[in-house]
Length: 444
Image (cartoon, rainbow, N blue to C red; front, side):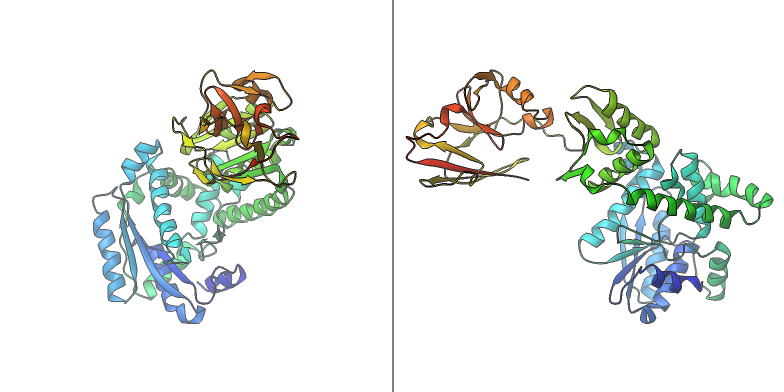
């Protein structure tokens, strides 16, 4: 257990004054970590609380949660208790029960951090857990990123202070400090992948190679060093991130696969959609980028949609339907859902580039309104020449995903402004213009 303080300081896992919640199920590992950090809280200068999540999977889960609550109350440790329906969540999201329970658990953790109740979440993974994770990731077909195993700290929030602690050390600490705990009967259920590795595979490996856990973890550390180097070569300019959307330029998909896979995962992480993405999914995305036509879509786990949009591969889980809503054309600010802000002012003197759009007040029909595209819309290009709006948007390479959500200023089927894109030749200013509307478009 001596390595815990050393690893906390070496990896800067905790700062003085921080409030850390220990994720505690009531089992030996989490009770050990809760007890250890609680007893070392003054030495570390931190506040320690507990968080327990009842997943509602087992008959005894409520009893285990009550056990943790009673322990915390007896020892004056503040506890946050939650109950979730992991089975229903997994069914609704089409996840395995393991995946569903994990996602429910992490949603709870995230809510505590977002509400400012805690700064860090401490997880009780130890050295044997690390070895099992590395093997499990390899069996799933991961690359060296997955083979690197778990980090001491992830997302500046989740910390694992016991990654260098062996199970034997934990058992000895629990025994010497007379720490109570509960047994989770599902630990013996080998239908769960991790349990199968823990209960079936690892005992056979250790029987032949007693130092197997350390060797596997050492392999993971080597993988991490290599992975960190490759990650350092990835261009930050390759990914464009917007609200709920990430895009990668298609020309990056000719790079080596080891580079491209990491680029995709980084883009997904930027919009919190990287969970449950496997190598087969990464291959599908690469094939689409290199071989598919513009507008091609594929659907992946967690509601992720990947779209080929001209020079980009776009990642999003936003599913926005066309709107029939209309807005009056008036001065001032107009906030349009799923698009952004349109601000209109009357101007008599202006400079080129001062506004997104400038149109002649006298040329604007009185019945002009802001709306979204309809069949039959036409648009007279700046400089002359009338097109169907659809053809014009294709020529301008406006992604299909955006065509239904981009506001239009229109009179009948005549489109006068495509917000943030272009104005019609019919409303442009000229030498006779006395007063103009200056329009600024800010996309969210």
